[in-house]
View (cartoon, rainbow, N blue to C red):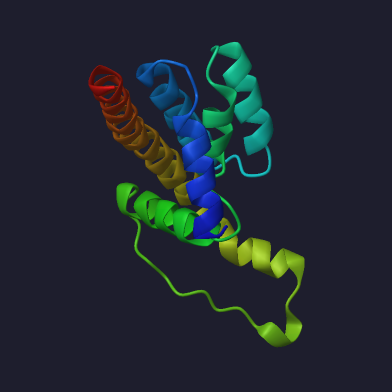
Length: 154
C-alpha cells in the first residue's frame, strides 16, 4: 500500500465523529485481529467484532489491514520468533531438498514452527492491539483539542 493511500485512509479516520476512545478501541481491536494467527479470516472477524462490540467499522477494518501482503512476512516471522523464545526453543535451520520438494515434505519441516507461530503471533497481536490503541487515543485526543482551539479562535 502506498504512502499516499495510507495518508488518505488516516485522514478519513480522523474525520470520523466517534469519541477518541471508541475510535482508538476500534483501531486497536482491528490491529489485534489483523496481527492474529487466524490469517484468512481477518476481514470477517473484523466486521463481526465491529458489529458485535459496536465499534467504528472503518477504524476496525483499517486496523485489520495493518497486516497486508507487504507486512505479513515480517509480522508473522517476528511472531514465530517470539513464540520460539517464549517456549524456550532453539532456532534451527530448515533442510529442504528442493529437488524433491512436496507439500508433505514442507509441512513436515515447517510443522515444528506451528505452535511457536500461534503462541508468538497471539502475543504480538495482543501487544500490537494495546500499543495501537494508546497511539490512536493520543492522536484522536490531539485532533479533538486542536479542533476545539480552532473553533475558539475563529
